[in-house]
Image 1: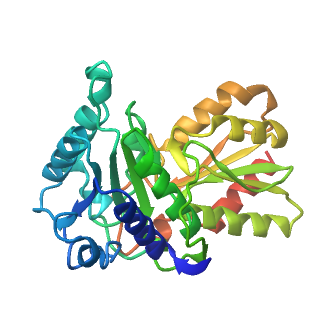
Image 2: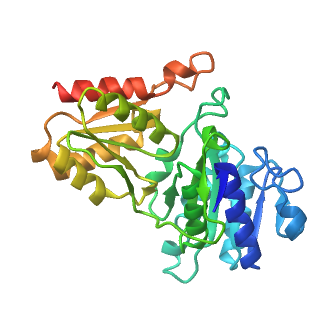
Length: 325
């Protein structure tokens, strides 16, 4: 075991993949000698050469178009989009090509060995072009898997599982936690299952669910609630497509209440899908309406970033509102 940060855990997963899999290639803007804007690919080009870890032109559509072609020919393609805010030029390639390759060929060919890494979210004073959380756009797309880690242990295990999964995966990395989240990580190779949520804390009064950087917000809110005698059950989804409906539904059937926390805007955010699904399955168990604590329905602001973020205090207020409904 080593005590490392989330960024180092991602680097370890990429290093392990390139060492074990001769067909693996890692590419994107500045990922080569520079090691990526956040240094996630540091020293990989030095170890494995320019043929296996290399820079691309500044064209996100081209990056994913190339990735689709490489994966279709049997390569293990690991593409980096430098910021999730810039993934939209590649939207057509991801949604219409990556996600549908296997389906439209009748399983004759696929791009299942494609993984797209991209840092997302606020908390670094990056303003609206470096702070967005676009995960909900892609959860509407059959054929993809969407994964979001919250700490170094998850980052390494989930990224290795994503790279080896026989489906194209978008791996959203919470940039706020790159160096802030530090923990014990096995030096050896391991995987964490995709599609399986993580029950962080058992409770009896109310369920709180989040993913990525926002898990910290629900943990702090739960601690505040505990001081007032409110017992919170905490769940980290880890994977948004597919997401662990059974785990969350079982929790809500026990507690009768649900708070969903995510950083993206409220309207059509992934919390809306969670709320609809849980209402369908748990309607007769609910003691109060499901509440979403989210970012605002505005472009991501620079000067008012703290006001925008769905923090622990906002979550705690939602807990009290639910408990007193």
